[in-house]
Image (cartoon, rainbow, N blue to C red; front, top):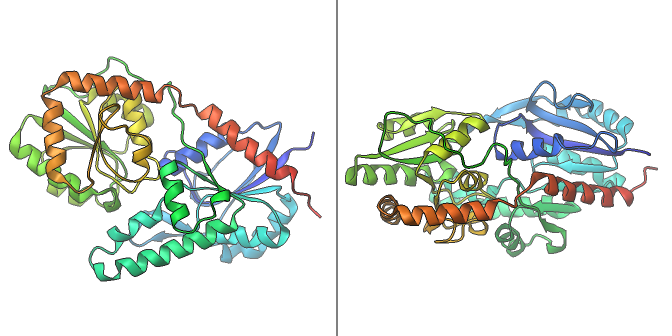
Length: 383
């Protein structure tokens, strides 16, 4: 039986780098080698992507305002890359993001009528106010420009997998073609994220609040800092634990001197922190999905989160978490104190979170993804 060939384009392909990369590697690790052949084209990433599939690394540069992230520059190897793609003869092209590399992939696919699939990993539209915060008068124009660029790119794709109904409906309002959008959420590794009796935070009997994310300002970190200050003023037996790294890390450490910063952790280490904490606090409202909320729930840690973005499809208020207006610092503080003083409510939210997450399965989601690949591959013939 002939294998289905997929050319997979992404600027970054580094295991564990962020939520988008974890999703991509959940796919990569589950590709049936007897049925599919993938060709990975990427900028920054691991030396070896898959021991059985070919890959090609693209020259890349750092993004000035977000240094951990890289931008691939396919123009520097355009001729060589096109020859490799011609030899590979993909049946389907998978594009991770609307970057320079993503547009190169579309430009290659379109004249050859190769079907294109994209997963909507990052809601860049919601990031604009954070990047223009120092010159807010340009925010509306910048946001309009980003929406237009995203709409043009994704409307050229044949299928776009979006993580939640909330994000799907928002994109439809922005003029994305509804018939191309399919809800494809995220799964959970239940072998890692599960409730167990485990303590990694020692010699502290206080109320432990955990935040886990990339430390970038678009995660509403300014609000997190204000929550920390007001909460610490009210109650000194509350400890904040910050998991993650990023360009905002140094400023956060200066602004939250009594908080415990762990840096980046493995998935197993992070799960231990979820299980050891009394509350997971997540003020970000720019999420396309919010994997960390599900991870916390699956480990039995109740959640207090911002009412916005993809979070609205995950957190059922007062059932598996508590929702608060994104910038309402006083509401967060009241919520923290109420949950701290009400262990019965925390237990109710814990049970609600466990019930909500128990059916989430990466295996089932990857089967759905591969079925979509199969359907598009069946409609395409190289000439």
